[in-house]
Amino acid sequence: DFKALKAKAKEADRLPASYSVDCITVSALPVKESIDYQIQHLFDVLLVALRRSVGSLLQRAEAFLAQAMESLSERPQSVQEVAAVNATHMEITKKKPEIY
Image 1 (tube, rainbow, N blue to C red):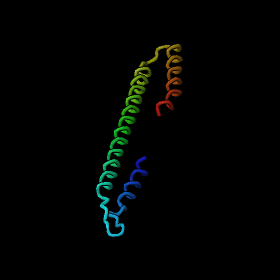
Image 2 (cartoon, rainbow, N blue to C red; image 1 turned 90 degrees about the horizontal axis):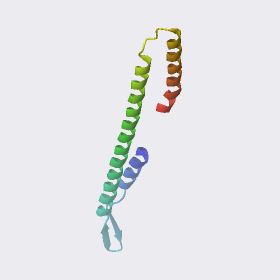
Image 3 (cartoon, rainbow, N blue to C red; image 1 turned 180 degrees about the vertical axis):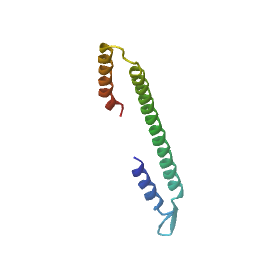
Image 4 (cartoon, rainbow, N blue to C red; image 1 turned 60 degrees about the vertical axis):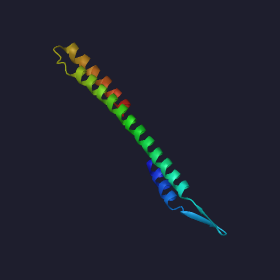
């Protein structure tokens, strides 16, 4: 989820750069950099997955439309052909929600 990832990135930015324990100061920059890298990597992976998902949906929709256009482009000449085209139209209408 992109919103949750952005929230975690903001939370990581609020971490202090160093911690002081008594007279010792410990730098947290390597940890912050690692967290930033991991968040960016996760963002990239989510983006690639989203692109693949959208591409797959687009291919299915294009295939559906091409098949529907091919089926409905014929001009019926008789009553039987009109009935067949009407049946094809009903089948296409039933399949439409599956695409989305």
